[in-house]
Image (cartoon, rainbow, N blue to C red; front, side):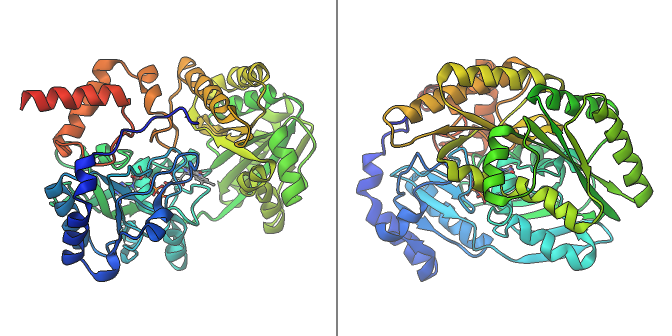
Length: 485
Ligand SMILES: Cc1cc2nc3c(=O)[nH]c(=O)nc-3n(C[C@H](O)[C@H](O)[C@H](O)COP(=O)(O)OP(=O)(O)OC[C@H]3O[C@@H](n4cnc5c(N)ncnc54)[C@H](O)[C@@H]3O)c2cc1C
């Protein structure tokens, strides 16, 4: 049993499935269309694996033109389309419906242009996040947004979810590093928005596309801002015997005006899991912060000393700053392994919400209280510097009712984030997971405007159905639109 409902498939589309697949096969290369259930089942879910549904077919184009052909055919047949990158979304953003066609952009893997003088790289959006920085390495540059999933996730998914990562405190998330896109509208028309030039004439459509979760178009190319590699970088580890005091330390560092590249937080549940898995040598305490600063050596030393004195006021149980590359790696080792280590403890729901940094101590305390009340353990490992929390709720998927309890607990935590002035998503998006909580964050009129923007791009709501907008509200919206036509 699960608590998130999906719409029933359209029987008329299912009945026409052979014709639709035949039309796609006639127009695209032979290996671009998968309709055998043994192959399409690989696309039945993303990283929110509690929810699964094989699509009617999968299309894997290699060019923007092929994406346009596939979309045009789906549009002509009135078939829902699920855009997909690597399928690492934790919010069910790439979950298919039984009457939908998945269009995956992971085969669009070309690096098109590197221009260090004008500080951009142009790529097809099926390249992985990590491969962009690898491509830039010989030029002394890198691409800043660094999701923990960067080995697998694609630039397409990053743009759709406005992804972030540990180093986004200083450099910003995807939207702050995206300069332009080439995208295909539901009708198959190809549109360019933005580009390598700074600034943009006209409406900021790029701002709309970034974070639109596959609701508006399929993005096939991207121009990304690139950053020169810093002269040096050094992490430090600060241990505290209280979660709230660790949260207070984050708030004080930010309030001081310092801007570290990263401030990451791990609580005791996470630390225990990480130690038995990665043996990173972390202290046995209530919470650890990893703070990384960068720049020239004198600048680094100055920042470390200022952070040391801020932390000292809060009496840390340990303060360790790295002196060389080996020690830096050791400090990051456990944090990088945290999600894998948590997986060894059992099933978990990975939440994603933001809170104002000054509210971190209170929010951490309340999450602890809520965990006690509902009887499910929670681990906190997150990007603390920008208040982007990732509570991991531990549960047993085989125990009847525990998934539902974990989801209800997760919803309480996300409501708490909104109540303290934060937001339902820092970087994972809304997907199906938080769709029905959108009314907690937005008034009906606000959501109506967002749905009208979708109307403008996708008038018949074929792109990524049942995501982002509360199901009942979007049904009423589409019924009203259909009636007024
Ligand atoms: C272990 C783990 C750690 C993670 N850590 C982070 C993290 O640190 N930061 C973070 O931000 N996220 C993180 N994530 C979540 C996930 O990796 C990101 O949301 C990522 O950007 C998804 O990319 P993807 O290529 O897998 O996209 P998918 O999962 O395939 O799709 C994600 C969304 O993008 C849409 N989409 C895909 N391709 C296109 C396209 N071409 N055009 C338009 N829309 C498209 C889909 O419809 C869907 O809504 C993590 C996930 C896992 C499993």
